[in-house]
Image (tube, helix red, strand yellow):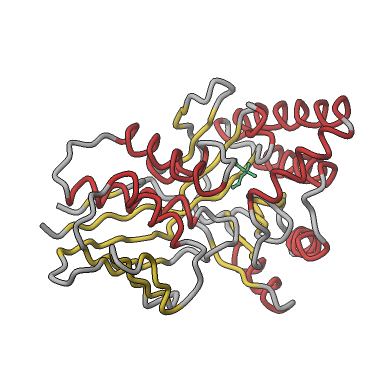
Length: 317
Ligand code: MEV
């Protein structure tokens, strides 16, 4: 039976990197999605294709994986999901993706979640959101070596979530419609950035531990600011979080430029979102997103509005 599932990308508002050290984080699903369609194949190999990112690969028992077009990057996540949650029967997989790839916006988590959900439907398996999130995290861990459950959780559940110190997820309130802009470039490997922070932590444990605690306090206060819709406070906390991310070593000149450009264009707050080292920034500018996008674009950066998405993974029936 054919099957189709889609899942959203994400933006981290507070707590990236600190979340790897069991600190809380706040993230939202964004209205850009990855969609996986699986069809039966009458060939003796499995094919994986994505027109919009120019990817084509086949897998056959005789020759193994053959990458005909594109880069292995995001394909690794589909392959790992197939290895764990599919038998060896040939299938045709199509990926459509609106999320910029490799920009720290959760493209790999969205592809992983959508693949697992589509495979569950294809195999007529009973599935639940916690089970999809758990298995998607397992795939990310296998491919990346290190990953918190944040990206896969938000992509599965959607909405605006607070991940607490015990890795429990709570949906929280927050009015972020028409407020967020994402500026993006190609990012560094998440695993590389996580390792870089770990090495700085090993060199300066007391200092970096204090910074991680300060990020945790910022995140907790931001949760309150979101719930009470205290816009000025939320923006200021984003700027504080940015200073702390700079201190742990994940900022770059172009991220800084995007951050200050958006503040000068009127954003109440702006910071790196995701792993840093390249990648993306998020700017908070309620009802004035257009001006920020135009200013970033004028300086040659990619920029888009990111509206929150209530919807997590969707399995088409
Ligand atoms: C990457 O989107 C966020 C990091 O905190 C890594 C992770 O949580 O796995 C940098």
